[in-house]
Image (cartoon, rainbow, N blue to C red):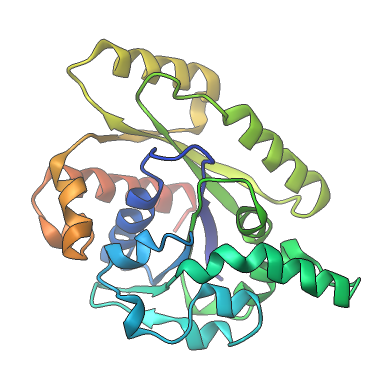
Amino acid sequence: MAKVISVVNQKGGVGKTTTSINLAAALGSEGKKTLLIDLDSQGNASSGLGLNSSEFEQDIYDVITGSCTIKEAVIKTKFKNLSIIPSTINLAGVDFEFVKKMLENKEFKQNEQLRLKIEEIKADYDYILVDCQPSLGVSTMNALVASDSVIIPVQCEYYALEGINQLLNSIILVQSKMNPDLRIEGVLLTMLDGRTNIGLEVMEEVRKYFKNKVFNTIIPRLVRLVEAPSHGKPVNAYDPTSRATLAYANLAKEVITRNGN
C-alpha cells in the first residue's frame, strides 16, 4: 500500500510545490511508482510537469466532489514512474461545494473526502504525494486527514518559523480528532543561500526546534530549480547533472530509507 505524504506549510513561497514536483520525480527515478496530487487551485504542480488545463477533462476538484472516480483523473506523465492528478482554478470553489453538501446531508464529512478517494488507489502506488495550497483551509485539512505523514518545507530565511506553531496545532488537532496515525515525516530546509549568515542561523534554529525530524538533505537556492517548471519538467529531467537534481535524489533516498523500503 502506498505511503501518503502531504507537503504542507501555510506560509507561501517556501518551496512546497518545487519539493512536491521534484521529490515525486526523484522517487520515480528510484523505481518507486509515484502519484502526485495537485491540491492547489493555482495548479503549479500540474503546469510544472508540462500539463495544460485544456489537455485534461477531470481534475482533483472533480474527484473530491464526486464528479468522477479518482482513477479517471490520473494522468501518466512522460517521466519515469510518475503520474499526476492535476488541479485547476475550480478547486477554489470546493469550500462552497462542501457547505452545500453538508446542508443537504448532515452525515457528509467534508474533511474525509480525499481520504475516501485515495483508499481506492493506495494499492497501485508506492508513494502518493499531495501538494497542498498555502493555507489551512478545507483542502489542506482533507490532505492531513488522508495522509500517513507530512513533509514541512522551511525556507532558510528570516521569519522561517513564522506560522509553524499554527501548522503544528492543526496537525495535533487532526491527530486527536480524525487521523491518529498522522506523523511528521520530516522538516526540509529549502532555499539555502550558503553565502549568507542568516541561512546558517536559520538552519541551526530549525534543527534545535525539530531535532531529528529535520532531513539531512538541504535544498539550495539554485537557478535550475526556478527554470525547470517553465519548461514543464522536474529538475532531474531538465538538468540531470545539476546540484538540484542531486539534492532531490538524496531527499528521495532519505524518504525511502525512513520508510524501510
